[in-house]
Image 1 (cartoon, rainbow, N blue to C red):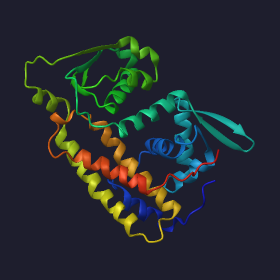
Image 2 (image 1 turned 120 degrees about the horizontal axis):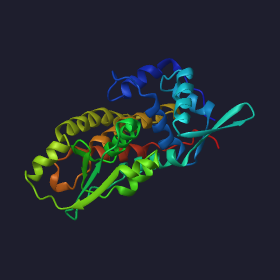
Image 3 (image 1 turned 45 degrees about the vertical axis):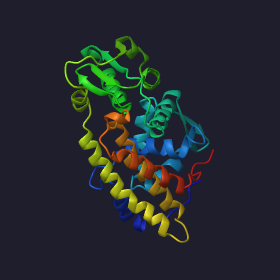
Image 4 (image 1 turned 90 degrees about the vertical axis):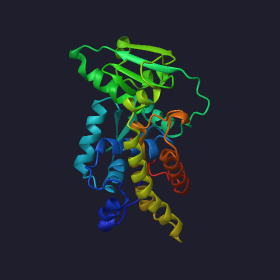
Length: 286
């Protein structure tokens, strides 16, 4: 069971730890971070009361947490089991696969020996299937694809398997077409890359991440007796909450296409260093 905590300073602490403290907290994404960082490494289930306690540490009201989890269950993330007076939530296979893709993106190494092939995905999804198209675009962005034009997306990597696993509706595959090969023009490859990915904005966001979470590393280093379990949870949570969205806008291109020096390398190193200093305590019982 998660231990209770002193709520008197949690709002101030959370605002201090957030990279973008004025942005509205995304409850669904917050649940996904907790699942990926605190639940899935150990198990595929969690108890409702424990998740609500964890969310309360992040200033999420109980009724808001409950409604978020209910909506996610309807969207295919969980199945719910009644055990006595408690509710146990089980991740579906699809929900687990989406979270596993997050791990793959986090720990994906920068490619040094690229084979020179670009991978192009095209699709034409009917207007009456806009939900399928919306979900597809979300997954393409998460996997680092860049939009070449409407219905055409580019990546230096073969992401077919990862994309197929992440699709909520298997019928989406019927609208997808994959191609691979060399880029033959008509513009310079550097210009094409700039059209697909906004590296200036990505670098700016990485800079904000570094400025915020260097302070977190200093706090860990300067804490003689160690952080409390609650503070360690929040610090680890906000680290992932801030870092994961950066992977959506950073395609992890081969190094020859990246500005030098590239802040993404430093940000990834900081993320890994702090995670290693903050043990993943088992906050959820099985």
